[in-house]
Length: 587
Image (tube, rainbow, N blue to C red):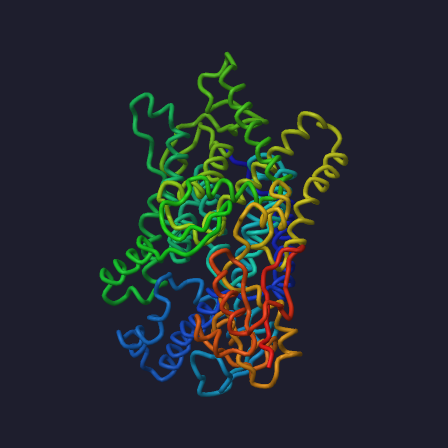
């Protein structure tokens, strides 16, 4: 039986949520925007435009005008490679919270016919990023509740802190992108499913959250497989008896409500549904390959190294978190083996294991309403499975490795849960009655990860852990330094101060939609011109940037050739590792 949250649990969960949210909003103010974000900024305003038009049509008594093929295509065709939910949330958050500059603002994809009021609490970029901040904060709260209900509050608190204190996840948690949100919703689906094993009220919630996950990113399509594997493990004794376990209502809700929400929340699918979905599916199955440096070699086409997700996780996750998670995994397996050796146990499912792989259940018959009644809900197995499964997806599908670690961010909260359990097991064994000392130790083990994550900001994609030797060690190992063209933000103050009026600039891997937001945010002078791409862009420029990745060397050679100098005007570095170099043509 799963313990229900008490008032203290809910208070701690709200505290975790609030601190995480405030930290992310504050940190995001110095975080450069990324190439994908620029696209989603524009998409967010367009998608909100449909809802604004719908409101106007409702007031005019003609709501049907918004549900035509022409109207939906006008607003939702842009960036239809991904579902609409997060971009819609970015748009609504922008509309409600940003400090309005309204009509005629440069860089806006749509022009509003009249001024509109907002709360004016956040900048445009901060408002766009707020939904990601909120979902990440909710993820931290759910991680706490999972650890607290499965094992102990100290396990939950440590797991929640270590989840946020992951440099790569912390970086993505500040962006108006989909990688942190899908990780948060992955955790939410797993948590809801686990609660639904013992509480019928959580079955429909699982279906709704799964629908939101599908509407966020395609990673969610893999969730049923990991949940089914766990459920079969819970009922392995039933299967050994050649009996079919009851079908959980959570699965039925996922199979019905999930696809309905997926369809309803993505207007682009409302017309030509089959053709549009095939196009979406084909885009991701045949996704374009990008460049990624790994152990000194640049990869831009298959075959990709099978070790990539595991090595990257080992070299980017704080070492204390890695050690504690490995210890937690060993403790869980050891606890399970102890339950198997108990002579009075009919089978391991019904054994109370305070330090083990299972939690106890009431001796009643499982039903579709309570599918794990009388059995263990196996939280340890569920956590371990989810710690490995997102990385294994990359291995099994041989997906392109263009995104460094962001495609398996869902692994990290479960590694943090294993770490929380590892500390809980240590305290229960070594300090069972010294609560104050245990709390002090919990704070102590969280401190290195917090410091490392803060050190990594705002260049989290350049950061590597102690095993790699920090950012310099990662560079020496030939690991990817960055991607997405976001680091140029660090050189904008220099450009604003030193660039001549109307200077033509070669921005390299930073594109125009990113620069539009920099202008709107007041970080970049609007008179600076973008000379475009590739060799013509370098030749036409007076100032040129090089964002350092292994496959970008040719751009620096072009600059040396056209500018007749190899001496940069300024170099942006992270702990001594060059990440962006700026050259100025000498006249």
